[in-house]
Length: 475
Image (spheres, rainbow, N blue to C red):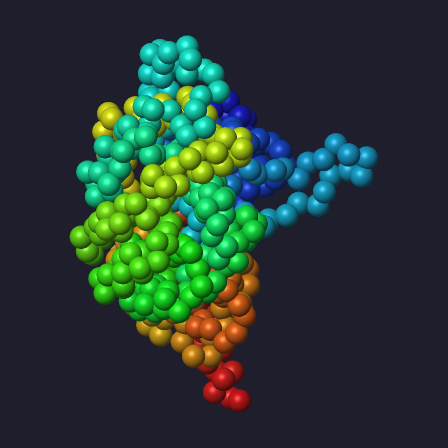
């Protein structure tokens, strides 16, 4: 047993059940500072023996505390007190703050994969390899378009896995998609493009990045066949940003007729496309779609990222840039001063060439598919009035709400149950009467927290949807 747990006073309140009492006691020890962030817990077996309870009781309590954010658990490592948890003990003149029992929110917004699944061992091995074998010049500033080792490894992988037409000399390494989008927008502005079409709905901060480069953002509608590329002829734009493999956030794939229409527009106007392939590796019920870039490689800028396959924190993305834009994008990269760490670039190159990257993708694809299936089954059984969409690929689902339900009310209700969720309303270009829906990430929560998350989500939906329907009916 870890030293702090050997002497830790754990009292189990007999009036609330052993598991709940154990959870309450551990929360209290964290809040008052007896357990500090990073402290390892006792083993479940040892703690169960000392307390005289079943080991399953301790395991269930730990899982609940992990789901709430008090503890952190990784396969093959000790469970620890979460680093983001602060105690309520204070040394300020005002004395200690009153204790609070409010746990951190579980973030279900569609922004991140399961970061607890990051392949730490493989990444550490890749870093050790880099430090042993990288030339001295790798410790310098490096090229603004990125290390050749990573550009070559990405070119090989993208050709084979996504069908991208690519030369390593036309690959640019960036600090994630947002950075890459800014580089391309700057390059297009240098080419004289003044207006860019962007899907509606789409992420607001992506529209803001484009607008910050002096561009006018023009709305391009999306329906069940994907972006309305057939409307591009009627729009005065020089470029369009698309998520053709899995539209973000609605989850539809761009239909073949729309792809053909887009290629026709490119040939007629010499416009450009920015293809955001943000989660193209994760598909479940269909064959992977070849990257749109292969249809017109000299007019389409392909953008990918390791944020969904590995973790956002490593800040690595890539662009495959047509010849006509390469000098402008390279200049923008130099001026941005945001080239990722050369050490991390070479480490990712090693992960790609060693097969570790694709092993991680395959492993997580299966894990996310299990969680997606659990979400589908649970909602079908308990909340059949909610329609679940956008499920063929990706890391999140669109929960279309029944008439009378309000997404803003449900977001607030979810927060009361310590779930942070997002509504579709934040993604539309302009306010107005839009479909009511929630976006739920089934990838972000770690495996052991899925049951708890589903319980809370179903409770939120059943309680508030039934109440909203009753109110509507009574009116």
